[in-house]
Length: 171
Length: 317
Image 1 (cartoon, rainbow over the protein chains, first blue to last red):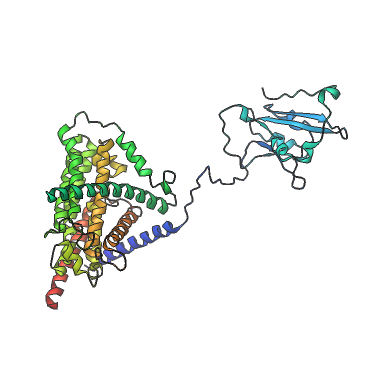
Image 2 (image 1 turned 180 degrees about the vertical axis):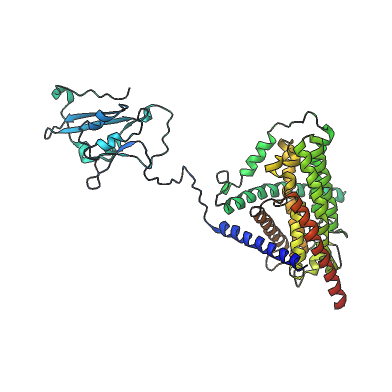
C-alpha cells in the first residue's frame, strides 16, 4: 500500500519535472534562422573565388602575374592586364572566374604571391538560372566602389601589345 | 417562430465558433510545439503564420475524396458526421457568462459526456468501415480506452457535484463564488484533466491514432474534407473538455474586472495550453500502461476522493 502511493507520488513528481523542462524551453529564444532574411556567417567555407580587400587602401592586391591562371587545373580563370598610361606598369583590367568549371581546389589561393585571392565564405547560396551569372567578374565590386587601382588610365591594348596574352578563359 | 430563429441563430454562431476555434487551436498547437522544440512554427502566411491553417483548410477542401474499395460505403460516409455532430451539441450547455447559456439543462455536463460518447461509436464505425487493419486496430484501441477513462472522468466530477449539490452548469459556477473547486478538490481536478485528455484522444493517450504504429489510426483511409472533420472534431473536443474543466473546477466565467465571456475564454484557452504543453512533453503510453493507469491509479483515487468528500460533507452538516 505504501509502495503504491510512493509510486504514484514519485511518478507525478517526474511528470512535473518534465513539464518544468519544457516550460523552460518554451521561454527560450528559438534557434531557427529565417534563412533568406537572416544568415549565419560560415567560417572556412569554400565559397567561390574572390579578391581579398586590402584593409588600408580598400583595393585588391592582384599584380596580374598570371600565376593563378597557370596553376588552375580546370582552366577556369582568365585575366587581362594593360599598360598604365601614367607610369607604364602592368594594370589589371579584367579578371574573370568561370564558376561552372571551378573545382574549388584552392590552388590559385595557395600560389598567389600577394595573397590576393580567397574563398568567399559568406557566399554560400550560389545558385543561378543562367550561365552568365556564374562567370564572375572579380573586379566588379572594386569598379563599383571606384578604388584607386581601377581608376588608372591605360594605354589601349592594340597600341602597345606586341604579345597580348590570350586568356584561356571560359570554354 | 422565435424559437426557430433562436435555433438557427445559435446554430450558426456555434458552427462559426467551432471552425474559427479549430483554426486557431491548430495554429496555437503548432506555435506551442515549435517553441517547446526551439523552433519558430508557422511564420509567413499572415501575422506570425496565423492564416497558415486557413491555407491548409483550403488545401484539404480541394483534395480528392477517396473511397476504400472493400469498405462499407454507407458507414464510411456516416462516421465523420457521427464523430463531429455530437460535439456541436455540447455547446448547448456551456455557460459563457451570467445568463449566457443556450440551454441551462438540469443534467448539465452529464449531457455533454453522454453525447460525446456517441463520438466513440463514430470512431469505431470509421475504423470498421475503412476495412483497413490499421484503422480497425486504432478504433478498437479507442473504444477500449474510452470505456476505461469514462469512469475516472465521471468519478472525478462527483466530488464537485457533491459539494455543489447540483449538476446544472450555472449552479456549479454559482457554488464557486468564494473558492474554486480546483482548490477544494485538487486530486479530482488532476484526475479530470488526465481522463479528459484520454477522452479527447490526445497525447500522451493518443494510442488510437498513434502515427508511428498505426499510420493514422481510425482515420487512415479518410481524405480531404472528411479527414478535416475528424481533425475539427478532435480540436473541438479539446476545447469542450477544457471548457468543462473551467466550469467545474476553475470558477467558470467568474473573475474580476473583465466581463464573464472573456474570463471564460481566457481560462479555457489556458487549460487548452496546458493540454498542449502536456502533449509536447510526454511520450505516448503503451496500451497496457494506459489501462493500468486508468484502472489501478485513476479509478481508485477517484473513488477515494468521492468517499472522502462525502465523509467530510456529512461531518460538516
